[in-house]
Image 1: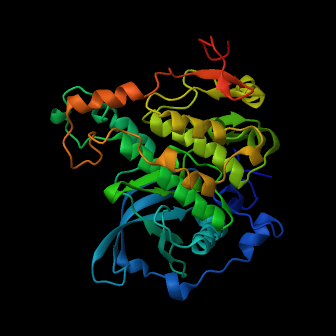
Image 2: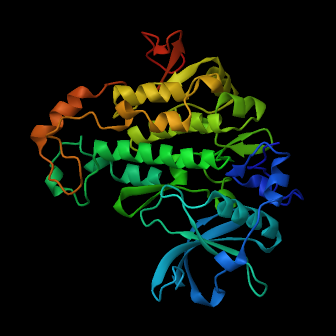
Image 3: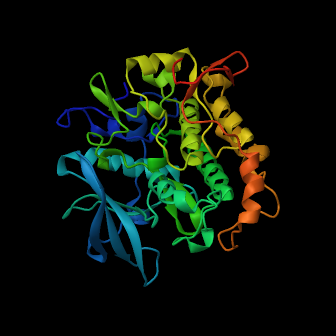
Length: 379
C-alpha cells in the first residue's frame, strides 16, 4: 500500500513507506528490499563537528532540510555548502532507509547526490547531499517569466540573465536523463514535479526527494483523497485509482513536468478544482492543451507520456533518444546561450513558430488530437 502522504504523523508504521523515491527490484516486498540494502560507514561517515548548520531549506511534519557548511567533505581542506536532511528522533529507521537508497542509487549528474552522513551515536542522524543554489525549478521558472527570451519587452534592461527556449529544452532532457538513471537502478520516484527538481550552477538540474521534510499539509499541490494527501495533478490514473506506482507512472508525471516547464512554472490544470470529478475525467481521457511556450514536438511528447495504458507510454530511454524533441528547433540566429545578447529582431521568428494554444483542457479521442470546439475545460 502506498502511504507516502499519510495524514496521521503518529502512525506506528515505519515512515520508510513515506519516502517518495522507493526501490522496486521485484524481489519481494519493497520494505524488505530496503532492509537488504547496505550502508558503508567507511565510505560515507562524516564528523558532525565539521558541519556548521545554517538556515532551513524545507520543513515538514517529520523532519527538515538545512543548508550547512561542511569542512573537508570532498577530501580537501576547503569548505563546501551542502544540504543536510534530518528527521525527528523517532524516525531514525526512515532516514536510514533513505540513506541506504541514496547509497544504492549511486552518482549521477542529474540527481542530487549523497555526499556523506552522520550516523554514529552522540547526535542526530543526518544525511548530507549536494546543495543546489538556485532552488527548485518551479520557483525559478516563475521568477524568470519577465526575462524569458520570448518576452520582447526591452530584454537589455532585464535585472537578471534571461531564460531561453533552449534552456527549457535542456531542463527537460536533463530530467529525462536523470530519470533514466533512476529507472536503471530500479527506483521509482512517485512525486516527479518541478518542485522536486533543483537547479545548480551552469543550469544543471538535479532530481531530488524532499519526502518527509516537505509540509504536505500546507502545500496546495497535495490534495486530500481519502485518508491521504496526494499530488493528484501529477499522478497517473493507475496511481490514483489502483495505487500502482511504476517507472511508467513516473513517465506520466514527467509529461506533467514538461507542461510545467513550458508554461514557465504554471500549476497544471489551471482553474480546475481537483476533486473526484477531475480524477474520473482524467481516467476518461481528458488531457491538458499545450502550454504557451511548447513546441509541437514537445507537446506530442507530453501526449505520449499521458497515454492511458502504461505500456503505450515511452520509456525514459525512449525519451532521451527523441532528438527531434530535445534538440532545439529554432532559427540559427536566435541566441542560444545566456552569454549572447538578445535582440527583438530574432524573437519574432521563434514566436511565430510556437503554437498559440491557451491553457486549459481538451478531450482526446482516437488519434489523441484535441477535439475541435472545446472552449472550456469540460465542455
